[in-house]
Length: 347
Figure 1 (cartoon, rainbow, N blue to C red):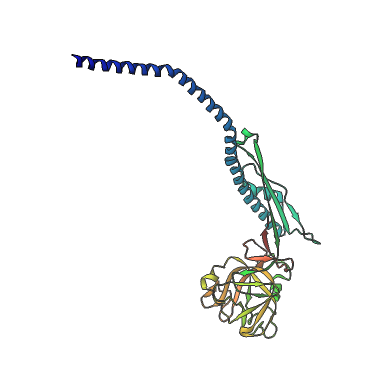
Figure 2 (figure 1 turned 120 degrees about the vertical axis):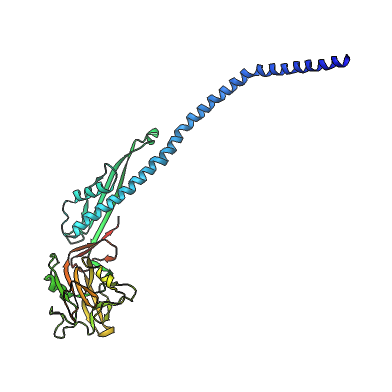
């Protein structure tokens, strides 16, 4: 009986202790809840304080990024507009520069972009312009920046293009014409027509430019050395360059290389001095002229349109005005103007 009583007394003690613990936890719950509620309020205050700089950083990340993207597109538009206006001016007729600039800005830029009036600057002591500057601008409304007081910004970009006669570069056909032949074909003035003519290459020339011998350099047909790697020749005004002897196209020129030039306008060097013979012959470059190729006969498979036949070697086409922006040629104030112009984007 004693053991039973002892065993029954233990659970009562345990139950009483557990009840006391439960009562203790219950008595502290309201205070804990009040403390937690106070901390929730502090978090809200901190969040509200940090919200403004957070939105500011968002404005920097999003709106400034959008500004850079708009400026890049506007720069492309300004470049295109300046090149278009310069191309017209280099051809001898600037036209409505404002309308041309706005058209190119509209086609290449962001919405609501405008082109300022292009400014054309003439060289010293001359009346014709040789450079043009175009400025484009556009408003940009921000998405997040109004939170920090910036509703909109203005984006702008400026491009300047210069042009002038070519002074040196790489021709895609290693063929050189004489200054006398250029004058005979153009009447001594800037080329402007599209009348096709056949130019018989030196040694068989009938232009009267070669004199009684009908030759410029013995063994030379106007082909320049290329090194044999490509069908191209790099030259510069007032310098001498070697003639490749023989009546076939220069080494490195394939049938396909030459055939691809039919229907294209290419820049070719013009020489005014020459000397020596055979593999030692040379030509001195005077300037560069644009020639539209419509046919040729250089012997063998080098034939398109057969403008001449047999042992003759000739090229058919016409000298024309031409504006080049490919970067293959340089320009210089000292280069003679033979109807070709090189554009340079200098921004």
